[in-house]
Amino acid sequence: MKEAEKPEQMRFELTPTTFQSSVGTVNSAYLSLLIPSTQPAKPTRADVIYQALLDTLDKKGVPLSPSILCKHPEYKNHSSVKLSEWRNLAYSELAKDLPKQSSQQATFARCKNELLNTKNIVELDGFIVIP
Image 1 (cartoon, rainbow, N blue to C red):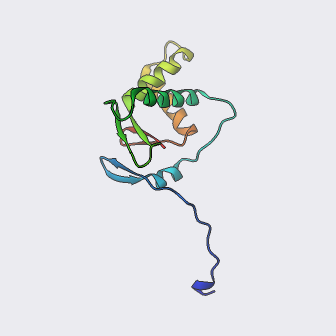
Image 2 (cartoon, one colour; image 1 turned 30 degrees about the vertical axis):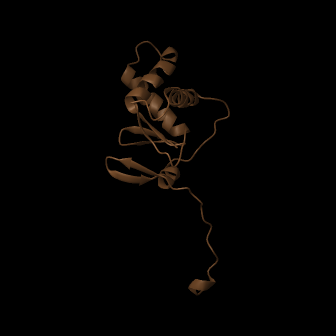
Image 3 (tube, rainbow, N blue to C red; image 1 turned 90 degrees about the vertical axis):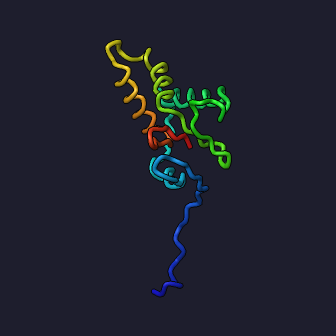
């Protein structure tokens, strides 16, 4: 079969957005392919934390808060949040559900894994990136 006769392959339309990081520029189109988005039937603890993060961004007025490190004007739905702030939010949300002997570090690791596995977000150079 000649090159011109091949049927056209299916294409994905992605709106590229770039992130400046300590290791260079990263295209969000690639990031969005890394972690598939899933929709749980009912809200999980990860959903609660995720919403708390978004509410925090709204309340603080991006990009005025020093805890918000970047907000890309060309694509308003992308933000990065310092992990320390995310850790505090996650811990305060979940502490009531966990046994008293759980350490804050273990709680944070569990929350982070739960959130990264259920939401279309990634961790990049110490930041949680929320597409």
